[in-house]
Image (tube, rainbow, N blue to C red; front, top):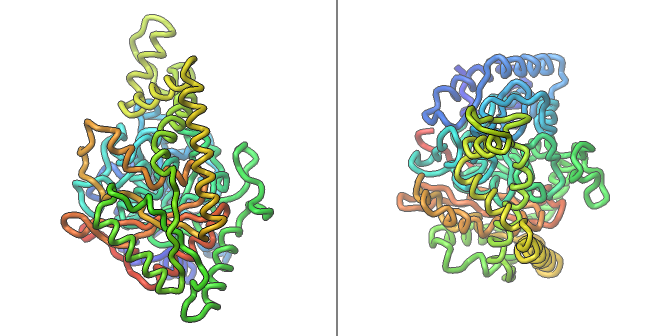
Length: 507
């Protein structure tokens, strides 16, 4: 039996497939078996062997004809927020427990066209609302490094599947850090590109001005073909960017920028990053940061300095304001987006009710979980008459100031920003059950990047926690449309470290 875990990169597996050392169908069968036998039954929410094997057979046909690309035959899986034909799309909610979409999300279509083979749908926090993958209506996902710990959220199923070696890549969505945070907790790499780089068409909406898709994989190098395939202008999405810094937002842009940055670094000799200014925000290293996380992140920054980069201390003075701004704006948009789930057109409908208003009220109360109801109520409140100006408009003004802080730093002081992704390592499942705001506070280092729409990524940079075996992530933030250079920088770091190559012992 061929084990997917034998291949440590998409390129290595792709070479094996193109050289016909194994078939995509054989690989898919083994991957499906591994997914079904994995110790955590909540990682995958829907697997359909026939759908997966049909894609694998198509990949084998492409390989046999010599028309294979870098992703042909590569097993991946999709966060259950991307609508898919055939597989159920539930958003991890009872509201959509049996929903099957009549079309694929643009991201799903793009990756399918690139030749990937989907194993199915991965768990997430319900409607992407959460930071620990505990809010799924179908059960919490555990961290492959420690079954008693969260994998992060909302893309926790995606990060766990990659860390456990069930897939080599997975899709996720990042509204306030939901690709970067689970990537950090699970010891994998993940990137949120510039807002508008990837189409949101077919992604179940949480907060439309913040939601952005992004891939997760073991290494930065593996993220390149995934992000490239996912990106591109989509006329079906009004927020999709037609151009990026004057260049078409099309296939090949990410790969081209990545290759150009790699070439520039290679030409620099013994100090490939000479001239690069790394901004380190002093607000990211305050009393809320756990010592083990701070030590690992500092060591990672020093590794970049050893490669020739210059460390620059900078200030992002409104960092703390990102939390209240986000948790006004995102719930407000969520209350609007989720109003469509009323029990009338699709989704859960209560069995017993007296009239239309009662049916809608009961259907929503039964279909939505606690965290979703909490955010809908907050959002409805801040948008209500008499509070709109005081809360929602004020939060949008604060958002503009946060954007200005980032743009000023990246224009005047530094070329990239580095710091922690999370204040601590992954907590235990259930630790914040009675204090949901504690999870909100844990997003302090990721929210500002999302509010600004900037590209940001997380890469493994060490381990911490009581046992010393829980992953820690380094966050790298760049200028708009600078995804290629961020990936090249991360790849440079991963050439001189092995954090990304380490795998959970019992995965």
